[in-house]
Image (cartoon, rainbow, N blue to C red; front, top):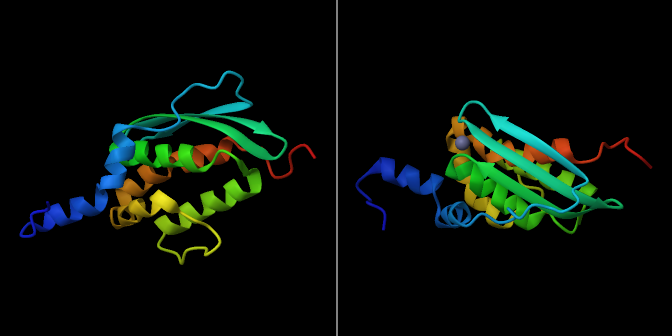
Length: 153
Ligand code: ZN
């Protein structure tokens, strides 16, 4: 396991927790959707991460989500976790989740009503400000893909 004498390794442990690596190696939700309601491309210039997010909306619920991310392990893992967590939730719930993820990355107190599940493994990323954008790329891209708050009634 970690080399306890090496502080840099301990920091890397924070950054690359086991669960993050698992999502990176086997990203969820890559399957293309046959009839997406909407798709959005995202780019994080500070790291070079690219992401494609597509979703199908049924009423006010996100039914399916496709996430295809090419980038560093943090961005890919965060997108994979998102693909696992979001489908089946109302748009309002998804917005709340996005806010919770952003809050976590800013070191805010967690919303007790939101279960961050595997995402908590990314909490250590906030110690590395440059990588926070990697962790948030999937979520800010999803936010763009969601129907507007003042959208069709
Ligand atoms: Zn990155």
